[in-house]
Image 1 (cartoon, rainbow, N blue to C red):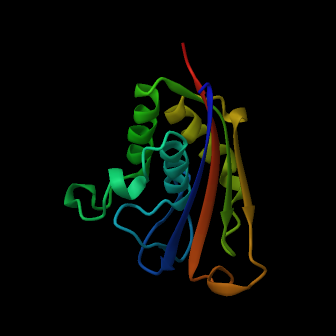
Image 2: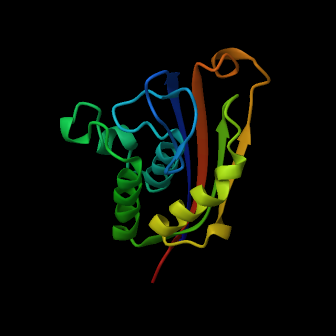
Length: 160
């Protein structure tokens, strides 16, 4: 098959006392995401999209939270390792489309930096990566600022 599509979704709880990592950068905020790693919900969704496109399972299979060596790991490392699995199967990314759902903080001013970081890891042009942000208009756990959700869709192409 020459093309494969993958979808990734991730959720993390927002808590005080943690840094807010999103798209590979630290964003100033009074809360951060809770997780075994740095809990970068956006990069985790991208990892799941990459792995899912080739039927390789999900981020929890490859990087389980029971692995103590992964405690507080930088999610950019997880993204790089996920991408290497894709490359080993002979695929490259055509484009990546993402959305982050959170009430606060506003993140779109950080999107160019996030795109540049992901582009460097994924051997893409930043123009091949889309980052969008939305809220739930104060509805549900996201609206109450208790959590964050991200989704990613990736198109892969088989290389020669």
